Length: 156
Image (cartoon, rainbow, N blue to C red; front, side):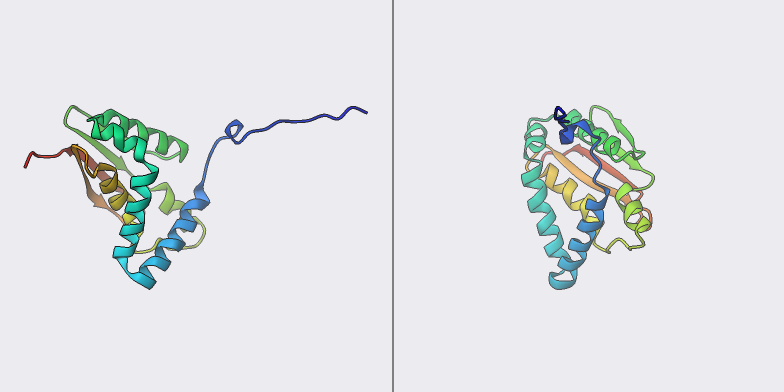
């Protein structure tokens, strides 16, 4: 009898990492409880500036459209609703319910008080040393609903 072999790659399947958010929430809680909110910010800053280095290079070159595309991909992968509007001067993202917060709650867990930093600090790190500034305009800790704005920095 011949042997049949099926070849599969991770790329053959849709990528969805919802449980990553719950694990990250536990890590954030540990860091905050043991070392304070500043340790959470430092960790997220370090992660974001390394992991998103290629995106940051595009932002350093003034490519705000790259950031808009990044967020479109993220929310598409998360199968989440987000209103992403870009004009010549800014990018505004309105999220009616954060998919990470929703998943954490679906597991019967509470998002840590510092979970907001996964939005605020990561966005600020993305824009560090670029012509853009990140602003978390609103954030609802219950749902993770937010308005995030990225705009050209004012010259000093």
